[in-house]
Every structure is written in structure tokens, then in C-alpha cells.
Length: 458
Ligand SMILES: Cc1cc2nc3c(=O)[nH]c(=O)nc-3n(C[C@H](O)[C@H](O)[C@H](O)COP(=O)(O)OP(=O)(O)OC[C@H]3O[C@@H](n4cnc5c(N)ncnc54)[C@H](O)[C@@H]3O)c2cc1C
Image 1: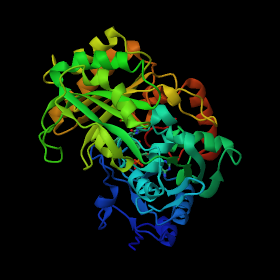
Image 2 (image 1 turned 45 degrees about the vertical axis):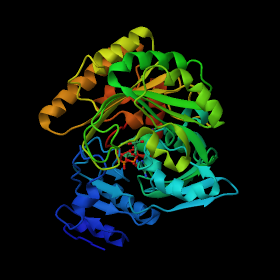
Image 3 (image 1 turned 90 degrees about the horizontal axis):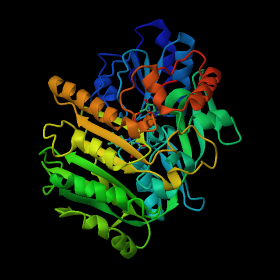
Image 4 (image 1 turned 90 degrees about the vertical axis):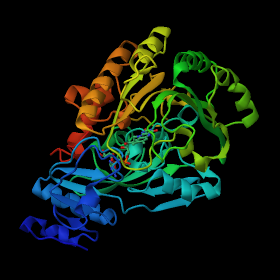
């Protein structure tokens, strides 16, 4: 353990079991650097928590000294710099315990979905992870958690039975629909506003295999494919989950040869029922245009990362999102006018439309803070920020895409995929005014000094 005593008020932190690091200490740079390299974190002190007790001590110290607090598990959501204060790293808290009888997993704060899947799949059970199992289960879930299988099973938060959470004054609390219900409500869609979760109990789903994968068409066919997809999704049952994307893939060895370096229109699908039935349902999409690469096959759910092929290595990324209420022919024209084949210098790696609806539109079993149930689609844009001029072009293209699609939008975003939080008005796009007011009231109760003030806060 590295303990530092540069200032007297850090003394309390010497009780911490995990490393406590200050700028310049060995391991500091590695500890603050997460998956997304776009935001450079330079906190005054990092507590690498070995367990919930360390989170309690760290928050007691922060509360006593009035130090602002941020939390990081993997850095998939590192869209804003943590440039002062205390960073609690949960990256070492990766324990996952599966109860196959109850079909639940107890997931510690730093576990990735990949860890949960590895522990649950041998029992024929799976979690509601998103498009990359490299993301942290807790950070994703407190932001609502839009799963690959969302249309079929709903949001990841819908499966949470309880959270163990440390609130900023340093109190470890158990919360569920009956114990501190407002706290439980706020932790399901309200992101990291009210406390640092140390673990959650989430239900798992009985599932072993899916029909899934990507259909890749030459990008020139984007209009034909998107038009066909927009028609097709109106007809499919909830067990068919899919997304349309325009991809400009870099020529990097991490990508498989047939798609590497290409300009593609892609439909990614996941179907949880009979594969033969799913294959028949896919027929109109497979014949929408000539398919160059057809990776749709029956596969173990543990291969889920191959469906969306999200990057697995750290990179400086810029993501953004808007929720759409409709995908009319005008909306399709507007989308392709920004990212289609007629815009060869478009700097976006991916512009994707995820099909929502189904279970994603139904009310939660227990009221939560998710404000995306009225959306028919989620539009997300992703780019790699390789150089400053490129970053400027990305900002322009991102703003232009969301502005062009705003006539078809609900006016909101999903907090998990919102990307860099802007001013208060921009952050407010993640929640309705009513949900925001309620979140503020919960925050006044549990974090009256606003110690958790980084990022997507109310
Ligand atoms: C490649 C990729 C694919 C993705 N796919 C999806 C998807 O399909 N669906 C979806 O919904 N999202 C998706 N996301 C977004 C992802 O859910 C968010 O980035 C999420 O914040 C990741 O959580 P993390 O803990 O890994 O990230 P971190 O950067 O470590 O944390 C991000 C934020 O989560 C909160 N947080 C983390 N840990 C805790 C804790 N213990 N207690 C309280 N708050 C905490 C904090 O607000 C923190 O600032 C994706 C992101 C990437 C990069």
C-alpha cells in the first residue's frame, strides 16, 4: 500500500486498505486513465478502494474536508475531466457471486459485464449488458442501462433488486423498493448523483444462445438498407432487437479483415427465439441490398460482443446521443444528408440508430428515473479524436447531425450515452423536468453539500 501524508488532513485516508495516490506517485497515471482517453483526469488524490469499507472511509474524509468526489470503474464514461478533488477507483472491486437458484448476481462496484457474464453463463443465465461487455456493470446500470436485448427484456435497471451504496457523508446503506425507496429510485437512471454504489443484486435471465450478428452492405447502399430497415422494424416482434449504422471503419488490425477500413451500412440483430424463425424474419433485410459480409448466426450469448464489434482497446472517443420519436422518410433523408455516402469526409466512426420500443417502452415494475420510454429510436454518434483539427471536425459533424435530427427527436438524450456534459440546460436533456426536480430533492437529502458534482449531475 502507498500512503501519503503530504497534508495533515490526508491522515484519515491512511486507514484505507487499497492504494492512496497523489499526482506524481507510482501508479497514479495508470489508475486515473480509463477506457476513454479523451478526458485527462488529474484529481488531487485517488483512493483505489479494496472494498466497501474503503469507500466509506474515503467519503467520510471527503465530507469532513469538503472535497468534491468522483468515481470511476473502467473509464468507459470518462467524457469529462476530473481535474481536482478525490477520485474513488472501484476497479479492484470485481467480485461477482451468482445464485443460480434465485437467478441473481451480486455484483461489486468495479465488475465489468464481462465478469458477470463469465460467472453466470455456466448456469445458463445472462445479464442485461450493453453493446460492449467491457463496460462497468454498475456505472451502466445507474445510467439506466440500454441492453442489446432491451426490446425483449427492458432496461438493466428493471432487473435490479437492491443496491448497497455509500452516501456522501460516509454512510453505508442498503436500498431497495422498501428501504430508502427514493434513493433506490434515483440510482436507477439518475446516474452517479446521490452516492457511490459498492454492489448491486440484479436478476439474471435464462438464456444460452441467440441468433445474432451484423449484416454489412457497401455504404453506397445506405439509403436502400435504412429505408428497408425502417419499414421492417415496424413489423417485427419484441424478440427482434436491432440497430442500423453507417460505419467508417479504420484500417486497424483489431478489426477483422473483411470489414477493416471499409465504409459500411450495417444492420446488427439479436433474436432470442427459434433461430429458424429469426432467419425467416430477417429475409427482407438480407435482400434490401447486396450483403458483403453476413455474420448473423446462432451463437452462445457469451459471444455477444461480436454483434456490435465495439472497440475493446482504450481510445480517445467522443460519443453523443439523442432520442427520436419517429423515423420518417424525411428523417432518413436528414440522417443520410449528414453521414451518408454523399458526405465522404464525414469524420464519424459510427452513426447508429437503435430500435427502441417493446419492453423499453413499458413502465418499470418499480418506478425509476429513466426518461427514454417515449423514444422509438436512439441515435448515437461515435468518433475517435485523433488530433486537434480532427476533434474540431468531429464537434461540427456531431452538432450538425443532432441538429438535423432534432425535428424528429423527443428533445432528450440518454444519460449513459450523452457523452460530454455541457451546461445545465444540456445536462437537463437527460431527464424530464419532473424527474429532474425529484432527483434534486433526493440529492438535497443525501448529498446536501453537492460533493458528487462531476459529470452528469442535476
Ligand atoms: C464502447 C461502449 C459501448 C457502450 N454501450 C452502451 C450500451 O449499449 N448501453 C448503455 O446504456 N450504455 C452504453 N455505454 C455507455 C456506458 O454505459 C457508460 O459509459 C457507463 O458510464 C459505463 O460505466 P463504467 O463504470 O464502465 O464507466 P466509468 O467511466 O468508470 O464511470 C462513468 C460514470 O458512471 C457512474 N458510476 C460508475 N461507478 C459508479 C458507482 N460505483 N456508483 C455510482 N456511480 C457510478 C459515475 O457517474 C461515473 O462518472 C457504452 C460505452 C462504451 C464506451
